[in-house]
Image (cartoon, rainbow, N blue to C red; front, side):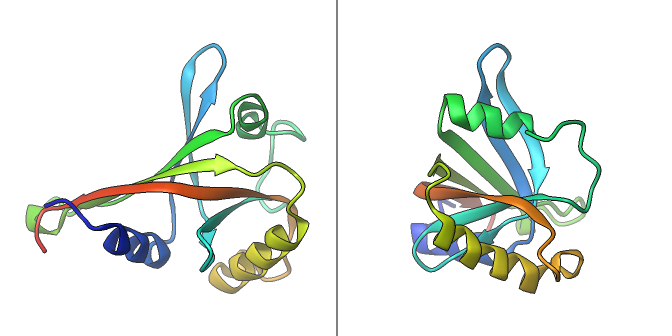
Length: 141
């Protein structure tokens, strides 16, 4: 069953993690698991934190977005015993660059509220992406 945009947005807001896909210039799709926050204006904040170890100061997803601002966030629910509970939502996004400090600060506040390890806002940055499309499917209504 195809989800309405409103249902997709509701599931996005209620879920706590997903797979962020950006475009690598050589290998194509670059997919990584992320947590996120969503605001009422249709923006998604993806943290670059100081909690988990990083291989580099600038992550590949950031370099990918600088080269191509398109991204997709995929969230889903899987139940191996009850396939009537399956659903997914695909969110088309556009990175907003670094000139969105107020929006990034607001999303950082929401991230700190949602995730206890982020209580003190240990963020190097918060990537701000605008929702430009939502599609989804659910096994049942």
